[in-house]
Image (cartoon, rainbow, N blue to C red; front, side, top):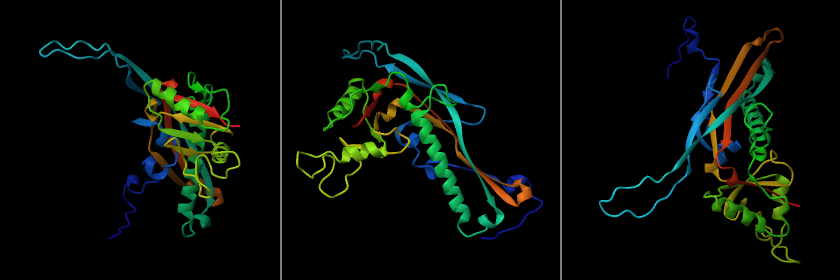
Length: 276
């Protein structure tokens, strides 16, 4: 492959900003794992409207040759508001000149963006910039009594989601909540974990649902989610570098930005639980 230096070429041939597919650079973001991402958002489009069927209506048998009646379905839409999370780093020229340094810097900034995105996705207050977090969305199922020595409430949460026509797909857990559940024993005076076996670390799953453990969840809390009930939108993850922003200190600025948003179209298909 031949490399050519073109100092007189237009600026577009020497880009200082690069866009990445989010699944490639921030695959651990909760919105990518527990929401149905349906739209792409760019700068001057802070919201996206997504239609959905709110009620499937009435269906039944139809006689041969007879006119098919209207099912009387109810249609609605959800407006997905978005916000931008970003991370900015200032690094000396010498630092980024070191082998592997640039890659490590980008990975660190990407982790920072994921941390901010996850915290907003779960805990954003209604009054905060960006969409309301799942935990603060009005209408979700909220079990006030903590889980005790069994998983009965978790079974109930899954059944309530199914009664509403949904399917539970994920459990999001705080590390302390997962630790507490992992310590539950099958019987009194037994060392066998209720969610694992013996000294083998328990697979992060409950009732066949994958468990995503994150410190973005409040201490001792769990969230059972139907992925199809949470609608998401996102932009590419954008990486930008500037050699001019910190010119006087011979430093380089590196910025990572990501616009994302979400909305729950069926609040009763998301359930919040706590553990003692």
